[in-house]
Image 1: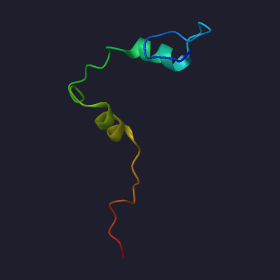
Image 2: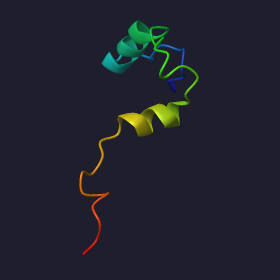
Image 3: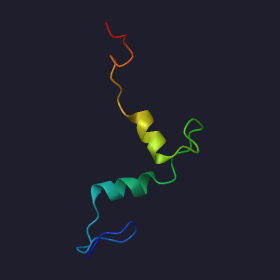
Length: 57
């Protein structure tokens, strides 16, 4: 049996990730992130290289 977005696993167990998603669903109400896509949120949260903006010598 394949695992779909809202279907339980064949063995009836829930993964830790699914429990976290279910727990956090609907809790994102910050005005700074309202209306952002998942890609935009992930880009914002991705760590940055501190040397990326340094001029090349």
